[in-house]
Length: 425
Image (cartoon, rainbow, N blue to C red; front, top):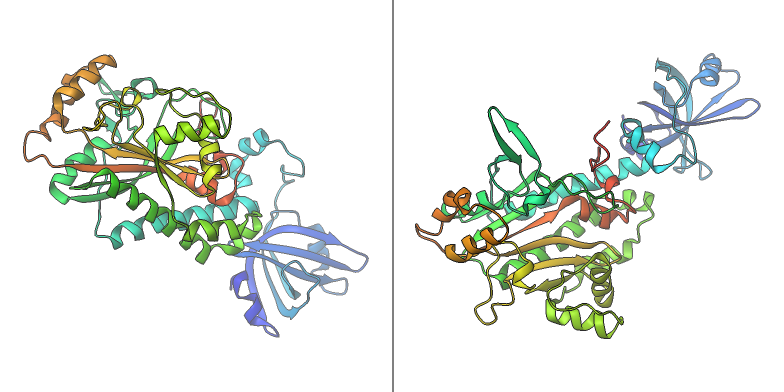
C-alpha cells in the first residue's frame, strides 16, 4: 500500500514500503516519519515493542517496510498516526550528507540525493503533469508527434550558441530547435508537435538559463501569426488547468499562490505590438528603450506586471530577428513573430513566428550573419515545391515549470541541470 491510501484505512492494519524521512525520540516512544512517492506518514514505536531498539538505531533515509494500524490524530503532520506492529529494515543508510542550511551549490552537487526532498519531488510531479498536458493538448487538436534529429548540420538560433560535436570525420551540432525539420514535416502532416531536448551553448550562469533543456514545439501549415498566437495562449491555459486539477498538494508544499494560477487559467491574455510595449515601459516606468533593441528581462518583467497575466508581444524589429522570421508586408521593419511573457518576473516562456517564404531574403540575412546559405539548400527546397504559409513556436518547458511552481531558479525545474559550469552529477 502507498501513503496516499492512509486516510481511507482508519482502523485497519497496513504495510508501507518507504524511507525514513524524519525521526523524533522521547522517553518511551519514537516517532518515525516515513516517506514514499505519495507523501509522508507518521508511525509510532513504543518502548515495550520488540523492534524498539531497531527504531532507535535506524538512520535517516534508511529503507524500511513498516506495518501498523491507522488512527486519526490531528497532531501528526498528515492528520493520521500509524501505531507500528512491525518494522523491517531493508538497508541502513550511512550518515546522510544533507542537513539544514545547506548552500544552493552544495545541493546541486548532491542533486542525486536532493531529488528525495519534498520540494524536488513536488516539482518533478508538476513537471510530469506539464509534459503530459502538452501531449494531450496537441493530440486533442489533431497534431501528429514528429521527432527531429539531435545531430544537425547547421544553426537555427544563432551560431554563437552552437554545441559542436565530432561526427566521425566531420563536425555537426547538437540541435538548437526542431523548427527547420518541422517545417519539412508540415508539407506532409500539416500539423505537428514535439517534446525534445535542446542545446544552447550560452555562456550564462543566470537562474534563467540552461545549456540543456526541453522544448515543446509546434508547427502548422496554412497558419498565420494571429492564429498561432491564439494556439499558444490556449496551450498555456490548458497546462495550468491540468496542474491545478492534479497537483494542488504539490503546489501547497511549494508555497505557490494557487489563486494566481487559477486567475491565469481563466484570464484573457492580451496581444500587443513591440511598439506598444516600448511605449508602456518608457512612459509608465521611465525607461529609455529605443526602437531596434531586444527586450531584456527587466523590460519584459515590467510589461507582464503591467497586465498581470501572460502577454503576447508581436512584431519585433526585423533586423534583430532570425533569418526565417519574415518582415511584414505593411511595414518591413517589423517581423511577423511573437514572444509570450509570463508575469511575476518569469518573462519569456514562448517564442514563435510565421515562417519566411522568400528564399532570396533568407539568403541575404544568412550572409549578413556570416552563414553559408549553401548549408540550407534542403531547407530552401521546401519553398520550391508547393510552398504554403505556415507558422510555429517553441515553449521552454523548464521556464513554464519554474513559473507554475514559483521557483527562484530554473535549475530546479529539471532533475539534473546543465549550464556552462555544471555538467555533473
